[in-house]
Image 1 (tube, rainbow, N blue to C red):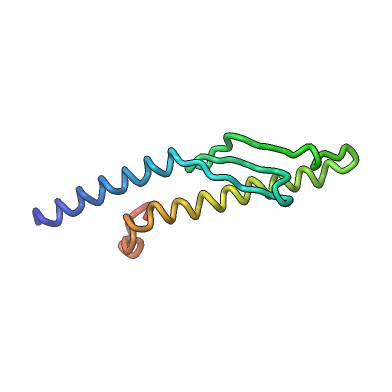
Image 2: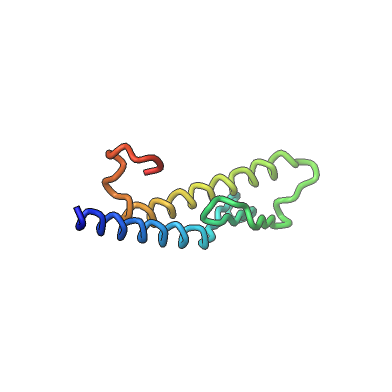
Length: 102
């Protein structure tokens, strides 16, 4: 039992370290061949949005809006991949245990 508790404590420490690393990370998503770039934290908070002036057409605002949405979605996808990369090794195999959040 003591060995099991020791392993659980080690896993908890690894999980906390992975969560901290994820929270501190930033990822970028792009759309339109780089015309729009969105930067998110590992927690999914939008921190920056860059729009190339070539993407701005006053007669076609809908395309720009679509590019912004696509860039943010791409960045969210990258957050998910990063989360799997950071958390996967720590939580690997625990999903089947019915533990919340794993």
